[in-house]
Length: 196
Image 1 (cartoon, rainbow, N blue to C red):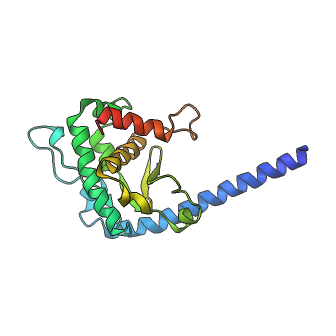
Image 2: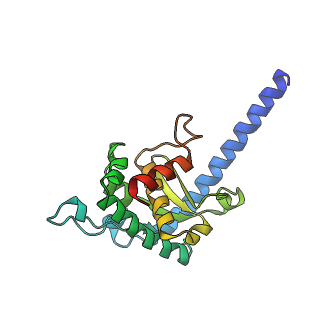
Image 3: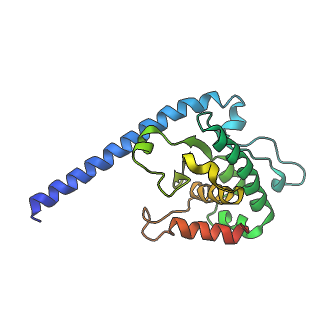
């Protein structure tokens, strides 16, 4: 391939990446509007935390997921059930908590700020859910829930929730981070550390 073809190919790839980013941002903006309706509890819901720490300490903090009303009903139910299971595992299993602590993150905060949104139209057309049940960006952003999420067992769904919360805590993933773990390796680490 000559230099002109290489430059043209690079420009085309960069343009496609930019268009994908713009479509993803537009879909996120459209879904974010819906979240405002589900945040009637103001600051508590915005933080993803409901309830307060009891005298027993942070282990008793009640944390509930923030789920967009646009997420399919069967997925909302699966998220709610699995989120409680995930909380129990992190609360009860020191090795599971250490996954968050090793990243310098608080597990309650990391799980509490996860916001669940459905995949947008652009993501559905881009087939981003092939082989996945959910995904998020490292360091934050909503967890996009794929249509098949409800087919997971509660144990599998809890593993996915912890996996995605670890991304909120800063855990990177291959291929975005060439030195990061693969998605399957992260799932294995979560399963082993959290007894799932």
